Length: 291
Image 1 (tube, rainbow, N blue to C red):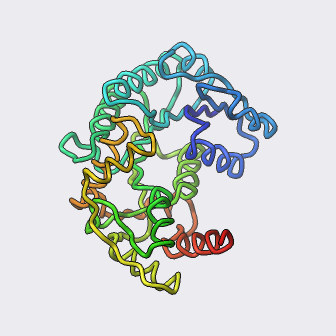
Image 2 (cartoon, rainbow, N blue to C red):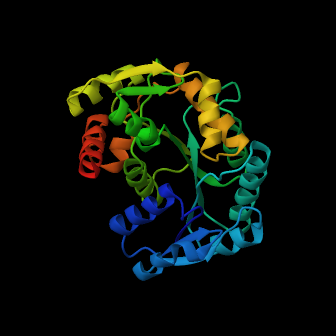
């Protein structure tokens, strides 16, 4: 049996779907704070349960009987997330999980400009010290995280974010999900860490160039002031801690923290990974249809 926390999130749902495709006979338990939000998964034979990082007893109950379990990192301020992840690791150990998989992030060092790197550094260390067999998956930026900026660029011709000059190995969620499903269902991944990156490292200026070619109209990249970026995020309703994290991840991008490429995701997924050009083509089809 395989159990997964955070199954209601965008990545969690795709991991469940990838697991059903790769190992349809494997028993799956999908945990989330609000089971009603993923009740549809029950139709595919997935057992849906409550799993709340702030209620460790629900995590232990979910992990009971699981040979392999996965913790998808939560969404909360740094100190809370550290406490929550430690509690989840303790719950997995208490439940007798044989191997625990954790979704980390590229360059999980406390020196990183990305505030949440501190969370991942602590969680990785705590997991290594737990005595559990582990697999750590250090995901790079998701391609889809650029969608808001790319949608604006399609309309205005301006692609603006902080850290524009930094190369990033963007990867699709579906590719991370496929690689993760392999790690969860295969042997031989014990006590290993994998960096999951896309097939190309691109800065915003290069992405703007690809967008112009793909869309058939000029697109120019600009370095957006981080304070202005923060104001825009606040206007969208993001809490202060999330605004700080989003600014930090863009500054870390600009500093070159995420430009390293690894073949691990493609090897684990067993197929070619999606490219930025493919995503830009999809954006063009979607937005052209709207207008």
